[in-house]
Image (cartoon, rainbow, N blue to C red; front, side):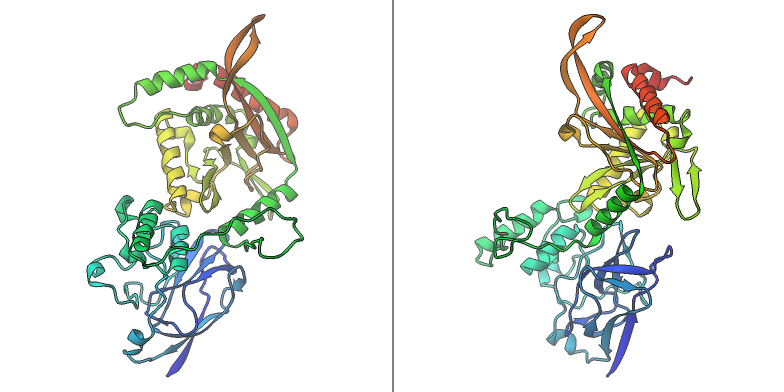
Length: 428
């Protein structure tokens, strides 16, 4: 017998530490080389770290939510255990399935091997060793003791979606196999109260990262908020006309690609808003290309996938790319490159948009445009009361680098394009 100490590897791009999101093994478990042993979160992405050796877990370092420096001991293995040990001490069935595309696998010593340390049933002997699904479903499977390889996925490429998991659990309950424990309904209590009617949720992983970045942005950036009312009646007419000409089954156009195309036009005159602030060097980096971040709500929290080179895209291309990157973010298929590099962000709550909002800037950007709900209401036009479709744009700017006058002028120019949508498609 001998012990092997595995240290947290260098995960790239200057990473000096990583947060433990969740262990997939515990002391006493027997793992095979290349099995995922822990999920960690860096400032860039979630990373699933595989085991570099086969052996029995002696100890692990760090609980969920704790930070571990690169190069420090992460896990200790007892190696050279007998071949029979694997059968006598089964590996935890909750080891995650095939990672989503935006979950980066850390390099192992033998990347080509696919050992999983668990004997699959005859019915699943030909299923892939790692199953595609979301982190939320993996967590539910872990809590319920469900082997994800037993579930047939109906999503793209056999991905297990929520409906697949729920159907499997219901079928298991019907056969007397036990049910998932449902969370208790909690009564609201004061922040300083305790007892069985409260629940503590540790802020870790992506949620911690979101909280950290939002706090830093709000604390470090002097936000200048500007809200303007826009008449989108003509835009709505154009949108409906274009949607009526789409091929059957083609997703309908929303306001967002029109707004993005208008923003591309406007930013030519306001380059200071299409910029990033490098605080370490004290430099503003203005971009000629417009890489638009699309704030997207996902089960794991807010993500901002990027539509690159919006200035080179047509309306249809913009709409298709917005749908693609947003769906990739929601289903955990967005790559690291698709989640970084935006130069200005558009955010929308859709039908929940309300009257106005105060969006927080997506640092290191210096501007963000927020879309609120469009509604029909009476307005005065040319001295007469008429019904028009109205919508508010809420924007925030970094007041250190975008003056209030310029911010207002930018939104007014954007308003001009949106209220006269033909100008969106005409080069000046």
